[in-house]
Image (cartoon, rainbow, N blue to C red):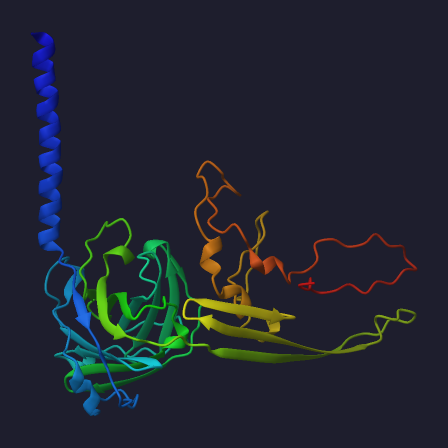
Amino acid sequence: MKYSFLKRIFLCQIFILLFTSSYAHSTDSTIVVKRTYHTAFTKTVPVIDGLMNDDCWNLVDWASDFIQSQPVENKPPSQQTAFKILYDNDNLYMFVRCYDTEPDKISKIMSRRDNFNGDMIFIEFDSHFDKQTDFLFSASASGAKSDAAISNDGNNEDDNWNPIWYMKTSIDDKGWCAEMKIPLSQLRFDKNNEQIWGLQVTRAIYRLQERSQWQYIPKGSPGVIHLFGELQGINNVKTKHQIELMPYTVARTERFQKINGDPFNTGKLSKISAGLDGKIGLSNNFTLDFTINPDFGQVEADPSEVNLTAFESYFSEKRPFFIEGQNIYQFMPDQTIVIHNMYSDNLFYSRRIGRYPQYYPSIGDSVHVKMPESTTIL
């Protein structure tokens, strides 16, 4: 009798748990509806000038009804946003209208690429449709732009990814606009007749510290990319076999005090080096990258840093060859492994290729040394 009574209690608890789980799922699904935008093919290429003065934009409807994510979650935003998307055989086109009832208060802070504030719009495409990675393109009201490769379901962002794309903004009495042209060669997608991509559009209003989303994603969600809305209507896009070659040369001249008897300290030093970075698209989702003699002189300089710790400094990778596909080396290992009292999420640090040699030969007073300043890739 006692066993039967306990068995009934156990089955009742299982039923309550299943009912609660089912109810929570159905409740969430009624709150968060997966949104879909249908694009269209255009034979006329719009002029990228930040103005909607091209008839081709009439081929598609506006997408709007953004939902606020901060500061008040799941509420209508103070200012509405709308966008349109078109495509042709070579490019993806997007027009975003950011309505603002106080256009004179639009924040137009000008700054460098990948590092700006002010009123902004963010567009993300999960073109792989793997629900783990996406490509982000961002524009500010001032005309500055940013881009990044996102991985790990939105938890890892690499802003060193710098694709080639075009954007113009404008401001009028209704707010501000951004018009974009993104070459399909800069994206990665499977060779399917019918493309379905993940899509998210986010707007930030600087003066209100407000953000709103086209596809509402609740705070605290385990990842975000798998919750994106969908972009549909891209059909029969041909494979892009793009070829990009980026040669560079670095020249250097030094003057210093001459040391008599030292053949390596003659008072002057001149050096010139050259290299090449290349990218060949074998298919839409398979690209061959190669480099010849990569050098830090071909990219922007690192910020100054004074390191007073016992551990080496870590800098962002800027060289094109080491940026493509960098996310495959970035993941969290077993959290029981602790490196330098912190969890490491980068198992391959490419900046060690090219750093200053870590050892110096033992020499006597009469021996002269020509010490390299960096370790070459060979």
